[in-house]
Length: 100
Image 1 (spheres, one colour):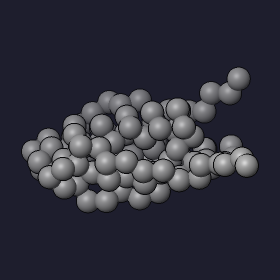
Image 2 (cartoon, rainbow, N blue to C red):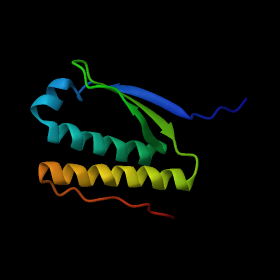
Image 3 (cartoon, helix red, strand yellow):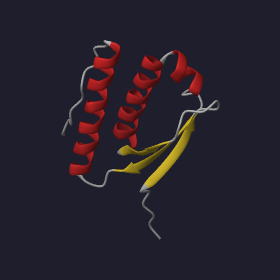
């Protein structure tokens, strides 16, 4: 029997409420890096982010099953990058799809 993963999740113990409260720019930049890594390595995009807690942030991902879903995920990441750049006066570069 073949199985296909369509969702997965994890708790990221370093993305704590304390980090969010004391260094929100680092928290949000780490989230962006995580989103890029998951999209790149597993075609995963964020479906749900729980509240940051003392023991970390729980994140649920869905797996992009088409190019259109991946492009939407990239657009969402780029919106987050622009928000972080604006809010925290950062210069994170946006991303794009690279095709073989």
